[in-house]
Amino acid sequence: QLFAKAYETEARLAADMPVIKARLFANENPFGPSEKAKKAIVEALPESYMYPFMQLREFASLIAKEEGVSEDHILLGAGSSELLMACSYLYGANGGSIVSADPSYAYLMETAGTFGAKWEKVPLTKDYAHDLDAMEKRVTDKTSLVYICNPNNPTGTIVSAIKLASFCEVVSKKKPVFVDEAYIDYIPDSRKNSMINAVKKGQNVIVARTFSKVHGFAGLRIGYVIALPETIKKIEKYGGGGMNITATSVKGAIASFTDMDHITYAVGKNKESKDFLYTVLKDEGYEYIPSYGNFVMFPLKMDGKKFRDEMMKRGVGIRNWEFNKMQWCRVSMGTMEQMQLFAQAFKELS
Ligand code: PLP
Image 1 (cartoon, rainbow, N blue to C red):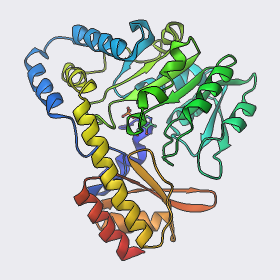
Image 2: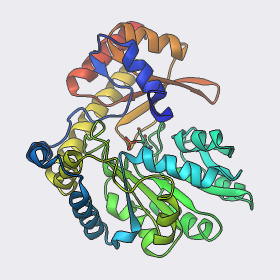
Image 3: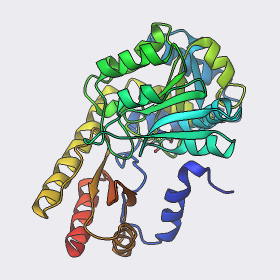
Image 4: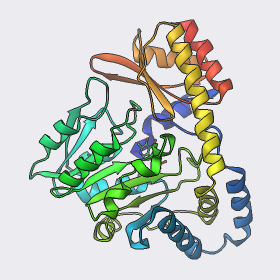
């Protein structure tokens, strides 16, 4: 198998689109890595004949300092997928069950399914957000993990940090809670809203972060989890630890991590594209789910697959979904030029 299951659909779409003008199907950041990151990557090249032991230590110590935890709370991965995969084995291989919202980012649950775990799907609320009360009720002795994606992919909704914090406090006493914060940098006060604060209070919460989104590192592959040291020791038996990360990527990540100017720039550009899209959708008489991420989900008025194929013919890649007996499009935010291409193709079809 050439691609990890997490990217099966995206990889197929990329292969099917020889002439791709607007790649809006993988929630990437089209503004790419920062200038500082690119410079650090180039400077790291001459020393890249050596294994990156020291660079990984430097990175872990920077994360520890910035997040306010000790290094034994951190596990590095080549993208967060490596760490989600490790958790899918740790919490899925002994026949447990994983409670999560549906739809949500399915990778951990689907992979755990291949190891024999059951996926306990809890529908979203009528506003397409996590139903934390219903999720709590579904936690039983058989549950091995609770997975929460905040902001949620594919709906872009968030749960209030106060509610999520009290959910983590109660539920983590019974079972580990995995909070996937891939898109957290797009929300205001991301630090205050992060469940890393729950880990710091000693709760059995695992927080996953990726550089693939706001940092623009999807092709450079950097991610990490923060959890209690005893949980990190269990996860690292099955993956992570940093030796799948290249010296160049890790040096780039060190430069990008505290580059607040670039983060502010990427978040601002994302908002411009999102506002433009909202206007297009409103003008064409479409509804949408207001999104806190770098993607927007909206209900279609035609078959989702047909819509995807027709958009593809016009050089615009999107993802289609079906849930709540409705057909949906999830479109990632591109540059303004790409959003205009989306709008042009969309108007031809709507
Ligand atoms: N978690 C979420 C919610 C995602 O949407 C993605 C990718 O789109 C990932 C994790 C995996 O990202 P990566 O392996 O690039 O860190």
